Length: 520
Image 1: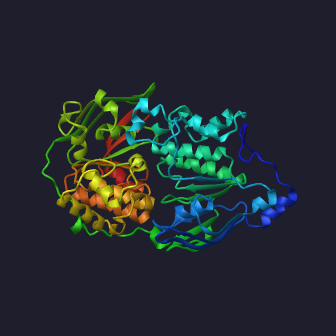
Image 2: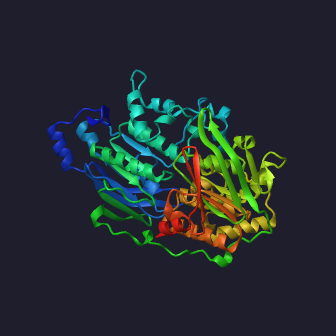
Image 3: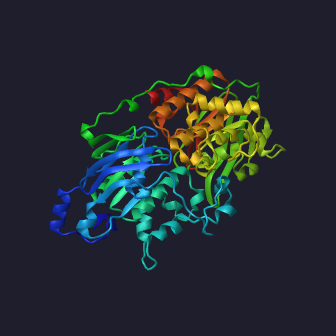
């Protein structure tokens, strides 16, 4: 057993004999041979073969559409594939290998046994009561007669969310939600832990803590396979698998891997002359003004006495750790948070609750967030998803005008995603889904852009190109921007102001020099 502090953690299974240990060290622990994954339309992975020995840990790299997530699901037996994935521990120990896949988003059911959740439900306390708490969901890992409280508390503590143990899952921020996913996987004591983009949505300090946790796990006998995305490859990783054009372009020790061209800074490929955006005849001195804002969930205070004024044409960065209240604050602006009506908020010259409808607010705002992506209707086509931006719905329920129809086509062409126009949103990769939803936020040419972690799920090229696009839009028009990102490399150069949230308090500052240092 592995001891960490006073708590017995990970692998509470029978210790193998010395002979078994020697055999395990000599033979590969994971063998992948001629793995092929096909959909109805195309081949996603073709002839993938590699092997890992005990104490070897793998990072899967590749650009968007390279099949990284598909490979992770195949290794964890979540999708159909041909070829073979073998775990030698099964033969040697006589037990089935415990494999845990931490996906990009955790799907759960409410207390009524269904998964019929909606986006704004996170902010409505009555509706959220039907969603399980972190503790209730984690207790499902254990048998009814066990006493796992110490293990749960310890795991939540090292992941920094023990204070949220009794919080509803639906009320978690995207970063808190990711840490909950990790907690559930770790409590299952996996022998193989597969992590799909585990750093996405986490703040810098949490990423560092996560790496320390994963390093400890890697030393305990668990094999780790992760997709780091745009984040640095952690030190405990020993091997690299690079996917290119459906094939395994490279597999070997990390020291022998040379970074490929797609990890270098690319040039933006968008033709700015074709950008379907104009500077609307829209004049207000103040776009957003918040006075003495107070926000709480029960007895837990998120924000207090916050004052924030955003003038037309200003570009703001909204910062803060996971759970600091960034998304809640943004949703008070976009009209999705019910506590907006109990606070003094002015939008586009009018006070909230003075007669304007939520649709009046949304019509002037282009919005994207991880939560909106998670709850968006993915059964509609990509064309319909973009078109829904005109009506601020999560599906297209009205007929587009000829002008609107042609503008959707222009955005598809401009972003070079016309080839997925008629495909259901769920049938394309997460990165392409995010590009489609970004087009949805921009299609109606709104005066205010509220972009909450817009580069989540995009590869390195797409992120750089998108940030360049936002800079171009903001330089060519007088749009107002509120931008959230934990990744300093994905912050537009046009940003000049920052609102930093910290434990209910806040700080406002100019960040011209901060941006210069971050980019450097």
